[in-house]
View 1 (cartoon, rainbow, N blue to C red):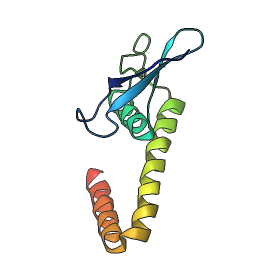
View 2: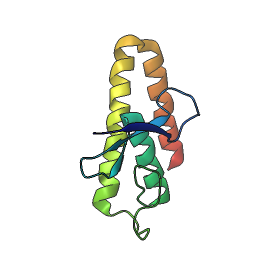
View 3: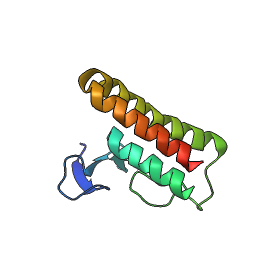
View 4: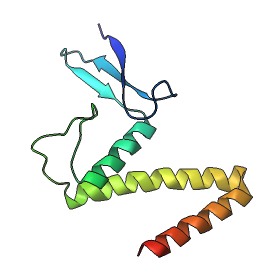
Length: 112
């Protein structure tokens, strides 16, 4: 029988979605499951540190840097989230959406 428990993972304590779900597989191994928001946070952390982490937020393996393909996948996942937000805001908050889009473009231009 699978048991389920919740463990803190990123975010503010007590905030919605701040806990990861831990389930026990049929082989008896504990598996940590993240929601899309938590996964995006994990990927952002990995891109920033250039190291892989487990879903339990522990450094994975020997700490080798991310490969080119791994960096591209994580960047694409984060961009997918941004595209979804842009689509939602374009429909539900058109004036704010255009202002935010201009601000992001200006920040990118200033960065480099």
